[in-house]
Length: 275
Image (cartoon, rainbow, N blue to C red):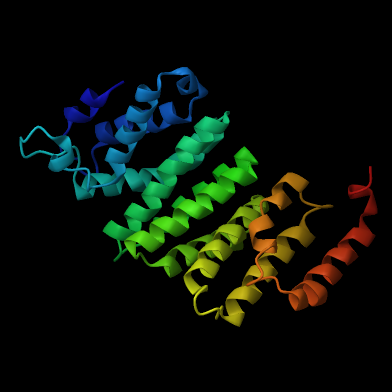
């Protein structure tokens, strides 16, 4: 699979199923650990190829053939981002990853889609939450704190460099943390990514709104206290950036809210943490 696949269609209509099938094939190749043993140039080429599907900036200038037809157009890249988010492809790819490198490739693609959505769909951000949901699902599947830290750092840098609306991304991760049902573990990476974005954007003023801090703490406690008996330690570890943020969890918040609530849970289920 190479760049010739993209040249089969220079422009992409939102309803073009052939285009979306080609995009899906590219994404699932990125999720496969088989790509780990390919040459560095092939891996880099496929990552760049996938980015071409979701960023309309990948146009004739990058195409380089001077024919006036870029690899993609705004409608087509929007459709591919929708497939990655609302269409469930991001979650599907996360479920198929089974190596650190494959998780990192899909994480990079999802981050690119988040930033491209802010840039190119600022008037309609309904796909932002599904993309953030897929990113949190990926991190939970990877069970990798270093991947979470990499994602947080990349998103914060990308938002800062492009001067995007970081509040919109913060709200999207909070919405993921509010989700009810069997994916309560998503709360842990979601509150970590939300707090990283929040503290970065407000670090200079040191003025985090009380309501924001209060909601993040409530979401963390709800996920921690309602699971039976305790969330898996690996998943709780994904809340480390949130729990270690002095801007969010100051000493008073820990002493008055976290410690008493978690202490009661521990007393009720001591067998869950004892060897």
